[in-house]
Every structure is written in C-alpha cells, then in structure tokens.
Image 1 (tube, rainbow, N blue to C red):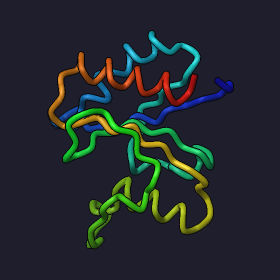
Image 2 (cartoon, rainbow, N blue to C red):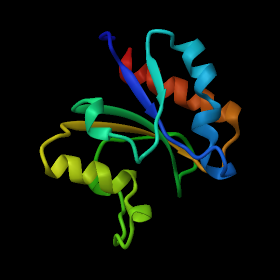
Image 3 (spheres, rainbow, N blue to C red):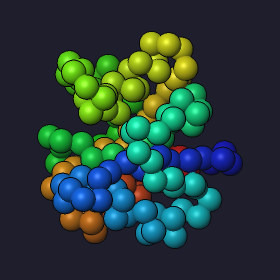
Image 4 (cartoon, rainbow, N blue to C red):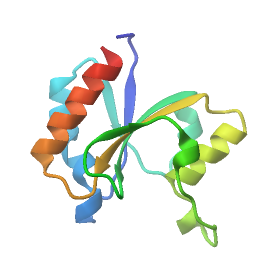
Length: 130
C-alpha cells in the first residue's frame, strides 16, 4: 500500500440509519493505523482533498458493503436549495470540472449491524488497498 492513503468518512450522527460509518471510525483507525480516516461533512471543501478520493458513506438500497467507482451511477435530483447539494452532486461537478480523477466509495448499507459493517468494510479495504 502506498503511503498517504486517506478515507473521508461521511454520515449524520443524529440520524440512526446514516451514522454507522461514523460509529466505525475508532475501530477502523485501530485496525488500519497506516490509513488516515477523516470525518467529513459534504458542505466542506471536497476539492481540497485531492484528485483521487476514498469515501466511506451510507448508501440506500444495498444489503452489503459495496465498492462503487462509477459516479455516473449516483442518482442526483434537482437542486432547489443548498440543502439539495449533496455528495453525489459534488462529486459529479468536480469530475465535470476536471478537478477529480477517480473516486472509490465504500458504501455501507443503511440497515446493517456495526459488527457486520466493520467486518465487510475491513475485508473490502484489505482487498482494494493491500
């Protein structure tokens, strides 16, 4: 694994179905001390995080932890306010502007136990990065 690998970890600590990635942060840091896991908010400066991104986020409609690399598969809806400007829209915009080269989104299901999420996520990280 090359040095300097970083994961941006998204989630909402106030919403049960969206907070699992955040609840896994400490355990991921212990299991992978060579990787930086950074809690991140979609309203932050995503373009300042590099041209190749690794993201952990909750994904609706999946049953197991899955890796997505094609941001074209991300569904976005019309934007009526800044509230509608979400991660998917940000990634598509950065790609279109030539600011983003690649993205790996490690998707965590909305309804999964922390134990299962950690096990599946750890396995996928090892497979992809080591």
